[in-house]
Image (cartoon, rainbow, N blue to C red; front, side, top):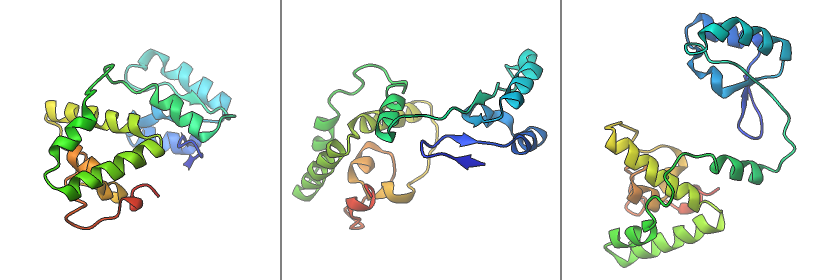
Length: 172
């Protein structure tokens, strides 16, 4: 398995066969293959069962900056237009102390500076969707727990102010 600089996963023929033989083929629609003959042969063989086993995708080299790639992917997210337009106001209303308000202000500035506001709105939508469908997710993982804003939205359950976690850890 290989992951390119865009985060796309490629598999060899043997890795794909191993996944199929172990009945773990449900992820094959999210990986790419560089061998054109393999993809064509496989897709022809499973075309009748494509509702069960996903068709494979060709790997293509991209001549695009990572920032532009991220923008393209963000434009493909499914989210109702204008979902939660008052998110920023909501975040400030959730603050009960001056320290919390200052932390939210600092983080929002950083989210804007790193061009991540769309991600913030999407995460709010995702968390709300998970809650509505009674889907459980983890309490927090990795550097995301350093964000107080993500705590307020409900992405994780770790209060970064209480545990004195530096937001710079999240945005490294």
